[in-house]
Image 1 (tube, rainbow, N blue to C red):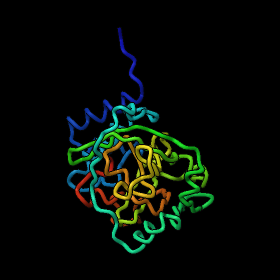
Image 2: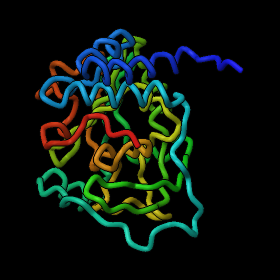
Image 3: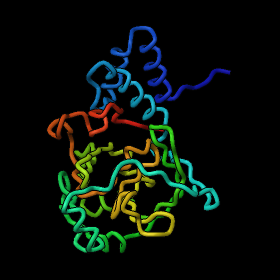
Length: 253
């Protein structure tokens, strides 16, 4: 019996075939046709990054979810990567239990806003038990509590032109995700972990949780969110600090 190929399957089959027959650069041209070029597309690994990003976006349904676990599967140990920010600003926030902390949201939004920790906690609560996978080989399962990023994006009125959500942190790191992950129901602004307030070493008062990507995309110590249609004017135009440190911008799992 003949098998009907969906448009999605045809596109991804084309990407793979071109990559094998004519090289990754040709596959990148096909990905560009569908707007699936990642910000770190240039350089020696650029075509491969493009093929990975485009293939996963095309093969995976937009609403596909990361696996969620039961409470008895929560890890007894949750490893920590990186030190707590040492800046005077952050230390003052910790001293005052984040009473003065605010998360600004601006860029391509109708209503630029700032939210306190209490503001976020008054929003609809979402809890998930998901896997945090580190690129260095370790991982753990934890329960995360917070508000869906999509809820905050709806509150500020994101422009239809938006393509990326950019996050800046108190430790001077920064990240960005595309709107597929920005609107995804599992993408969380987390203020709780395993039934307690988020500990400082895990990103207090708020960290990003993107369970469909490797752990380094789940930026800690959030300070600012900016919605943009292009990343070309942000730092080194690679989409986040990750490629500057040798990692991929897109880290889907």
